[in-house]
Length: 213
Image 1 (cartoon, rainbow, N blue to C red):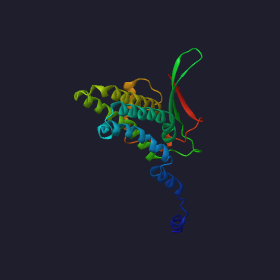
Image 2 (cartoon, rainbow, N blue to C red):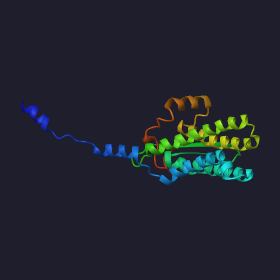
Image 3 (cartoon, helix red, strand yellow):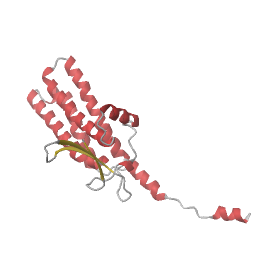
Image 4 (cartoon, rainbow, N blue to C red):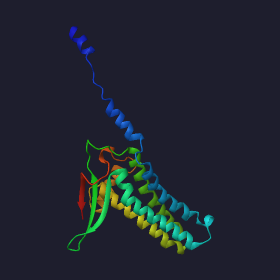
């Protein structure tokens, strides 16, 4: 009986820190500016393309505006938002022998660094996947409506955004170059159920897992 009373009155250590950290990761957006521009350029390009007749009668003006937005989006997603929001980075470099290498980096988990939040990771991947699908739908719409003068612009939108999507999928999947394996693995994890925030750490040059092709 005494032993039971002792067991009942023992102090129980509660780890509130982990619960607070988990709540922080789920709710907090640590890079609001990067998150905003991750969506701003690509969404603006789609909106202006769809509503260009309302904004202006100038084909050249709309064409150049959308193309500039697509270019800004490609650069910002490839060089900034991927590093900040999910700790991933990819690029191409030429070695001393003149050979081209594609490099895919993914930050390793570290207890000394603050993990990216689930909200940021979800926004990043949803924006990265949904917008190219919209451009593909616009491609068929443009083709069937015989608006052939816009076809080059739609193809540019597909190419630029699909390049970023492909590069970041390779980063996430460890640099696997077989597209069928990459696609199957990526879909099995599902875009909408983003990886645990511990997989994505604060960006930088230290502690990166690098894959070359």
